[in-house]
Image (cartoon, rainbow, N blue to C red; front, side, top):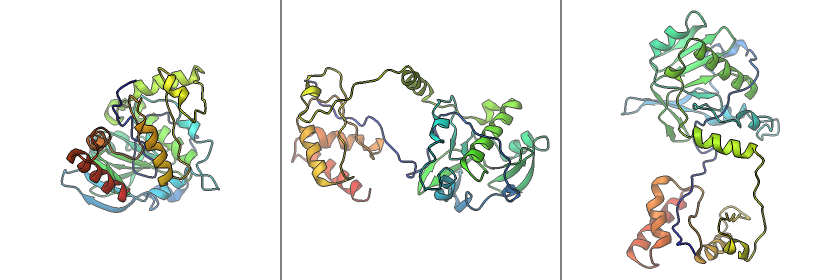
Length: 298
């Protein structure tokens, strides 16, 4: 039986929880947008802006209108959208039409695209909006941070117009195509640090390799397996009876690591102490108090 060293295998962040730029392909129709997109749209522009002490401009956006472009009439994610972002990309791509870019200055941005590809249709000290001849508007926020629901990603970005996800992603694709055309890919696009892992996972999935899935109520199969993964679902999110059953499984031991959703990486030490320290010890009580306080507001 392996020593149960419990680790956070990864942090699962719902897209409604905060900004995440990820590696994927950009795809979609290059459909021109309406004339009303010639200036920054209130739906996807700042609702609360300020300058942070680090010198990066803090750009807060209303998230729901941004994501709303990617939903179907039923309010759910358009099922045709996920396949368009399923292929790994060597660079960070967009957060629902908000494209991550490197720290390029406003003057450089204007010099790169105006007047050959676009014209300036709005600007202040923190952003510049360019309307491209392809029919879309790209509002650049250089040397900035994207803030969504209080979560901050210290990454410069450009908000690309589009009435729906096909237009938005098509316009992102057009913008990246122009960046490549002028030979400025290295200046604007940020490397995806997990590209190698994503590519390996994607290739494995495409190879058709599958794992057997078995219902194992008494864990006999899992206990006998030398290399297994146990999935423990919740009937209702956060219900105490499910948590009690999970703790019984954990207390049985036999795990190399345990992954928990909704914990931050900086809480690893508290999680380790809670799982590994003897109940009632000062270390255990301290860790328990920290986690209880966190989940009280989670």
